[in-house]
Length: 397
Figure 1 (cartoon, rainbow, N blue to C red):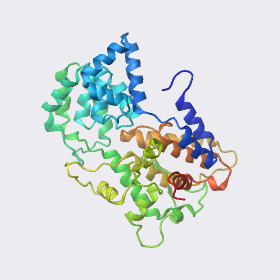
Figure 2 (figure 1 turned 90 degrees about the vertical axis):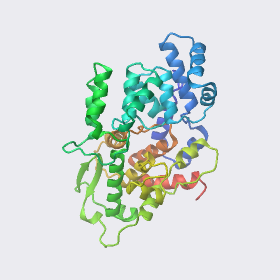
Figure 3 (figure 1 turned 135 degrees about the vertical axis):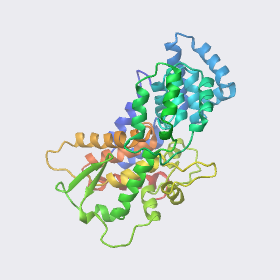
Figure 4 (figure 1 turned 180 degrees about the vertical axis):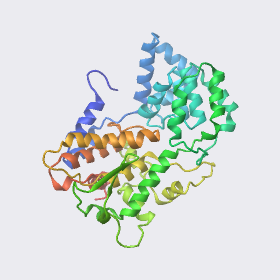
């Protein structure tokens, strides 16, 4: 657990920034990495709330055992993974506000945050902000079950950003519960749990990869600072005819998926938490196609674009050969790169921002940092560094 004497996030960040040597980076990941553990975050949230409520820790834990169930409470304290539904229930039991609960979901548990197009999430937020019980929130969710749809293509003529529009309306505050329910009804056509922004960003990036061809062909073309760059949806794209494929053979989804997986195995049977965090939910060809085609699974849900798919696809488009002129501010450029990934990709998709105590995120930041600052030409490409990382981590090279 982080405390005033040992800031584990700071340690992880410093190593991500300073470890250019691949062997040293691997040693840190495998031996000294301070992975964020749900049991520590759970305990920290309880201790913080006990102080806030001026309540003995033992008394609060006793109450939580009653509210959450003794078995569940014990399992979570021991490190059993916390599901999103359980995390929401914990947020209610700890009397968190909406913003605090959002941080608990995304930062502490590495789960998706509340989504303003999902009527269930909006009700959960309202209940948290208005000191409801979990049961009260569930009652209202049941009342408005008719609003609970995936709705991937809402009729929203003239509205460019549905999520932001609904959030702005929600943030204006409601004078009564009845006014909040009117908000739900009035905006019924806009609600839908399907995360359109994540889907659209993923589809856009796959489209860019299709146009540019395979990775080696893309990075072999030196285009320099004079190349025209345009930014759209936070994704920087190089607009130059030599970057596009000259032949008429499309790069297949199989090839694209293999590229963005970067050699990370999609099956890992070991028990090491660091390796499990890196290998979990790695892109596979069938799932990528299901996402792009909005395939409905056996549970009746449309396949959504996972966070790791988005980050890896972003890296394929942005992680190669940072090009500098003499006098360029590398530190500012690097920070802009991280900001673009956080604020223009992950945050709009309701996903947790880069976390130095997440092994996958640490590997991404370390590879980008090395590409920007290490003078060794062998390390000037973040994607190739991750590929070498993966080969050594999983004993494939």
